[in-house]
Figure 1 (cartoon, rainbow, N blue to C red):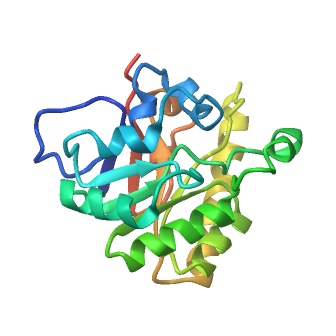
Figure 2: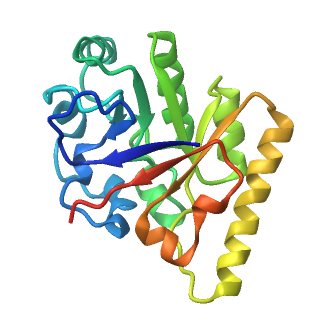
Length: 213
């Protein structure tokens, strides 16, 4: 099983191909990382472009309205990145918070269209999603490598943990039935594994968030 490491930490070992570099996560706990989209801590995409290659994968704020997309793709390719993913992401926005941010292009659909254009530019892509509807949206955009995020977890018992895992596995199984050629990763971390062992899901790989605080 393939495991990719999602991290905000920099490394001098540029051969670490299975790293997803996400600078806005630097200094955050894994629990805080899920809120990175609504925590404007730095010019995220610029930080990625101005840092020496940190692995094969660049995590980008896909809804950033500033800068030239073509120039960004060119810069990332020149740095040595070969994959792009949509993190920090709007997939966790819901209810009043999503409505309050409706004036900016903060939606899974916008992010999936961005990733589709990255594919056209020659990059591999990983699309984060949390629901069956979002997974179908990613597939509709032509994305076949997906990362299932469990959402903001509030798990207090073994029974509730089992219910969460069952619900996530049903999403995975449904998507595989509808798109047999899809590759699905599960998002997890040491913190997640203590309450909901997401690594036990029947998936093709893991995206493991690495705490830097």
